[in-house]
Length: 257
Image 1 (cartoon, helix red, strand yellow):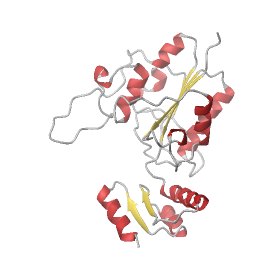
Image 2 (image 1 turned 60 degrees about the vertical axis):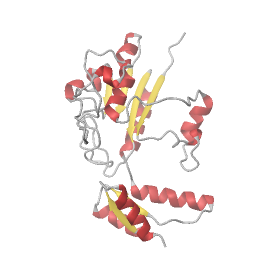
Image 3 (image 1 turned 30 degrees about the horizontal axis):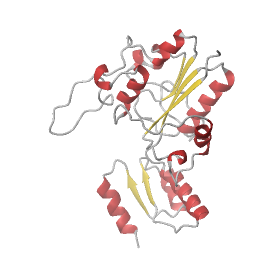
């Protein structure tokens, strides 16, 4: 029997109902919906942890975060009345993981996107992956979601190239040019790309013939370019990250007629 090809897509901050094939009436995900219609769709599953590093370590090794000793996102500390439990700051090299297991079975292995499982000695190329694109110790793109990225495992693209598009294209190119077997593509969705969200919301409301709503631009990048673009869109107000929920609610209330 020929070995099946495997593509594993892991997306941070994706809610289970954020895909059309799982019930979303707002987000449009036609390509993933097509994959779901042609394959198997699981409806009862749970993440091993509500934060990123322990979850991906668990997926790679098949172990609970507590078993590994990696119980928080690397670099994070609990805040509250309870004392934070100590945790390891990398995925140990001696752990058997899915990439190593599949390589033993004759697979080629590629990693594209976020890693966040330790400093340089613990990056994907040291954990059983033949190719590593963009995987490093970073938990978020320190250069932002547009080139230049300041990522030691990803060359910069043209100015303002969008990171998610770049990672998607890198994965597609690997599939086209290699006898691929395993690709783990980890796409970290930006918390808010406010300008694009506003454009998509307007498009959606127009198609559905729904009433317009007050538009609040939530952005982590208070650049002049962002502000100029927002002015063209007639955005009514701004909130800059980090923000708390009261800031958002108060801004919305202020702008609702």
